[in-house]
Length: 297
Length: 297
View (cartoon, each protein chain N blue to C red):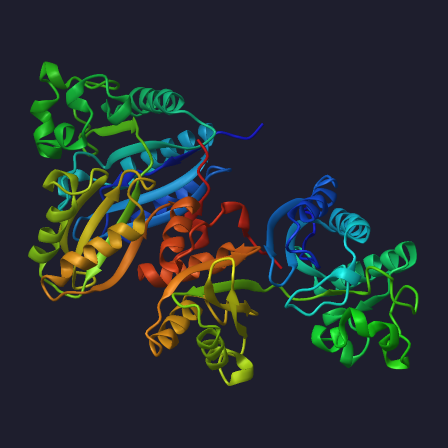
């Protein structure tokens, strides 16, 4: 029996104080069987994205321990950053990876939501594939009004939490938990500081701008790197291979005399996505994954 | 305990009659635990390269069964092709892949050589890292004179076989068996039929032409595809990444107004080699193999 493996990508509202982020990672890693994949902190956003994987029960336990820790260390009353947020742990996505269905991931997300709501006294909204109503499917809709607005929003009938009290957690706000499909989070840094150029490129390639169906993109300025960035989610890497995203951005950047400086992968990438893009650049008509091995000598 | 995994890449002297090749593959696959990776037949060379992997004992058994089968089906007295050859099974390389040392692969190759020599009455030369003398390290030195020349060559004191009789096998000639380091066999097809262009490119990039230390290359015409090909072995994929080979060939081809039409991977490629070349094209400063997973839903 091969174990059912899921991915969990909590976003926490701390991107400046790396000591706090480190303690949150330690809470995740304290659970045996869970593997930490990536941690990406943005001081401007004042937000970190943590990626870990493992068998279902272990991942749920690690997500719970992370929430316990974040509630102790993060106080949203004094939090500021450019990214909208509603909770100390803002969102906890549960993603199917190996031998598991979306239905099972929805059940897992509800199990976690119930525990977090009941035991931590934190209001929980089920979102994405776990959402119980249409207006809870997308995060921006839930997050609207942000931490500060939830004193009022939470008592509106439409916004009664799915689990936990109908009252904002004083320091940790509320959290969204839900199952969603896997996506590749991929950022391209441009040889310019001009955020407008990045945003204009993003607009021309994303679905909402009439571009690619499986692409979410936005432009931003990353002060840490002093570069503009096209920040993207690739929702279906089979239908929209990475190489096409890279070359599309390159093409559109040319219009502004701008080139790609470097790129960045947040979290996981499936080997299948690497192989198909490598095959494109290498002009290999076929690259069978059975031809690929991991050498260890 | 993780098993010791080796690769075996026998070259057999049949590249036209695919029924014979198929029977040889079946002989390999008849051994449980062995996984066939690739089979590549060239009718002009009249030669096939078979790639399989598995635990040591199973791979040795499969290589033996293949030899038994090839001896029944291939008669070198009527064999012709553009590739030099000395045996029905021309060479059997044994390559370390996982959890195994070169020393252990040398021992494995000797075990196979002994069995093939004694039980099949086939003269065996230990070559590459298994060679007992300097002039048996490289295949061209052993193979010189080819099948037809071995009636005389084999009775020279210098060319007494390491195992088996000091007398050429009537139909199957002789075989070289030995342990060698892993290599990537990679071919680039050009948008030309001119073999001279491929050879000129090969000369300019290979070690023996003053080019890359870890690159063997030759130019040839592949009638099946009606294209010239730069045929290469990359001896150290860490020191000479694939992308550099591809872009070097592209660069040199430009001199002749020629472009790359497609490329071809024979046998195995380590995931590390794919990641490093993908990272180059994607301009990823770092791509940690821990970020790469195999999704299976």
